[in-house]
Image 1 (cartoon, rainbow, N blue to C red):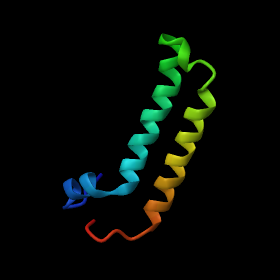
Image 2: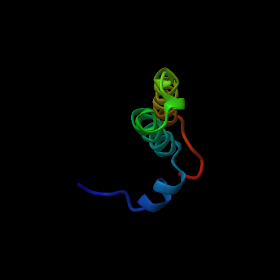
Image 3: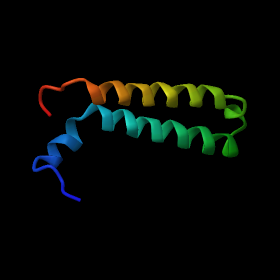
Length: 69
């Protein structure tokens, strides 16, 4: 496995990675929050929808040329 020479810049600026991180956050929140607080029970569909939006955003941003990356 070889890393790109400017991998730190990619890590900071790539929107696909930001959307991926947000998707991980929403997936985790949808699984963990309902266990600890009754207010979040029944909102699993909301977290699932937010995760899907993040995944689609990551896929689209992967195809779009970004100026600084």
